[in-house]
Length: 475
Image (cartoon, rainbow, N blue to C red; front, top):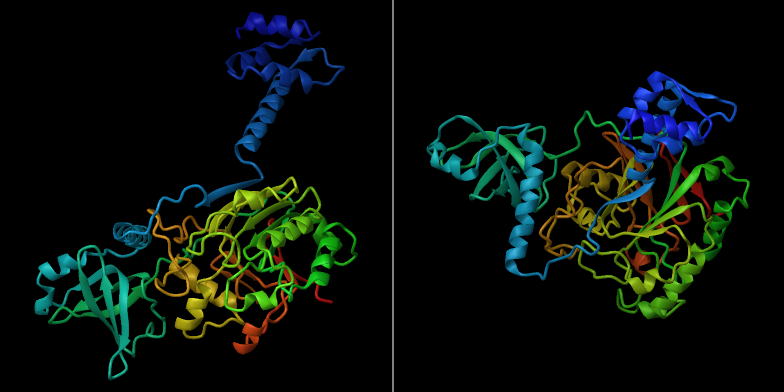
């Protein structure tokens, strides 16, 4: 639109325009600039000024940014993107993707060489040069004199690494199939004597994102609707609190904008032998219908994200897609978003990584010091390795997708898991780690395993400052 057209358009609405303002309008290609400008003018104004145009341009930029970045959006999710059928070549590609992406995180910190090049350059003859390699751990065992012997693999070959018991990093455990960097010297015979081990890890310089506006998210998981140990009374107290029908923590409830469910919303069917004896609702679809009734009582302004777990009606192999369409249609709440496991979402500019947490079973079994009572410590070990399920062949069944969806990249600001039925919160290098407990009392299985659940306690994360408050609905 040229200057004459702009003058005529404004004159038809009863306004004159200053030369500087006309010049600014002529340079703006937005066809909606005049409508936005006029709608924002003071009704008593007679002349459009340069400041009026500047305000209109700022409003347009804000509107564009808002449209481009909604308050809630999914960043990564396997749903509708799964391509694997489980053949050999897919597993090879899956592990190569893991190795490549985790290796790239460490290459700028060490000058790593391929294992094949180390062997070819005569190091096996006992040269005493310092070398570094990045590899995937294929075996770990202790020697007769108390040292640790590790087998590392990369795309070119494999080599042995000896970690002496007198090294200060000896107590840092290594897990099968994780990717690490090792520096050291090669002895005669090709054994690498380790002088250091590095992990992909979170940079020390990591600065978490925060919301510009007041906002909070309630993190829940393992509701287990349908089980005869589901705690309905505390759950209903939680719903009352969401709706403002409780005086407790009223200020916190008023800032709440999101609720995220990290799996096991229902108890499911046939998940373990004899489960049918422990069910209050015996049909899985009836379990979801009851869940939908509960969630329909949540305030309409809340945005809800629901991801599956190992008790939900999706494939057991991970990554898991979102709940099936026939289940999603049961939910009438207008602001429910269904995502996969794992998945990453952004809310108010803050990144949240959702993972149900089945791999925590493997860490408790294989990582010294890991326990069900302190799940946040195990979560920190996963973050250190930048991988949600490093051990292959354990409790987690892996679907060999072309991309390893368990690699933690980009870094989240909050990592949310469940599965173990205990609440745990900590901060690791700027990332807030939360395990959100359960809404189920102690099961027979947990009694046999001496696992004490931590039910009806909800971590609430303030997205503006990262603080976490745990609200107890058990009493």
